[in-house]
Image (cartoon, rainbow, N blue to C red):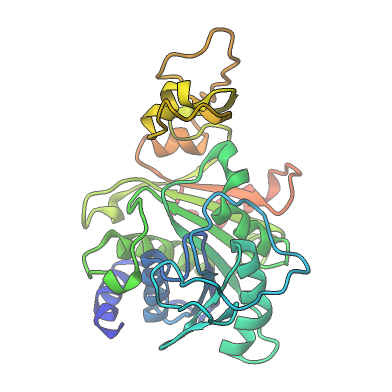
Length: 341
């Protein structure tokens, strides 16, 4: 673990100066507590002077949305964690052996948020101490538009917002697939993603006195997506305030079909023709669209997916409920003046 700290410190130096005061930060995600992304972020935040703990699931829980296990006991694990650092038979909640600030729950991302707020935070920082900020991610791959409703990364941030804690949902184009944090190298893009998030966190801290006197307006969070970048060039990416919109990568639209094996898009994802069962596939505007299928294209240039396609880091202001309100976005614009347009 210590071998990675110098790399994180170098990236910290390229971000903003040390924070005016340290935050207690809870990091969660839907890719698992052993993910390289959350570990790189934790080390970067700690090197910058913040206090950061991780609480994430034992397995990949991508796509589970806002699911949480209500009145369900977290019994001992029946199988090992994704990267094998937590063996079968371990308690359903706890911390990774040798890593006392990496907590786990054998459950969903939202389960992990609640455990992190109510149990892990007090364990790490003292009884009754709450996180000042929750960061969900960085996720392997982006989360945009209508697909946010199914994203574990996004809904973990939403759960924190609804507990009264400001939250960031962070997703990145690179890296795109799981890697255990024990395999991290100092030049990996995870550390550049982490440095970008540190820059945003420090901007929120520096501008805390503006637009309401808190990190973010009440019941508000941010959905952040980072595009692809060349090694060492992430700091050149422009930041843009975006609208969530409905657009996603490739503007896909879900479609239920009676025979998944006969669907050409399903074939591209490896479903053989022998699978003659119903299922959900997708309609992609760049592919042949079934006759009469109602494709809704989001062409708004301010939508986060469309801005991301122009190689911007997108920052969308989100709420803990579905009520639309432009006032928090105006406040965030003030706080990020000079960073994001």
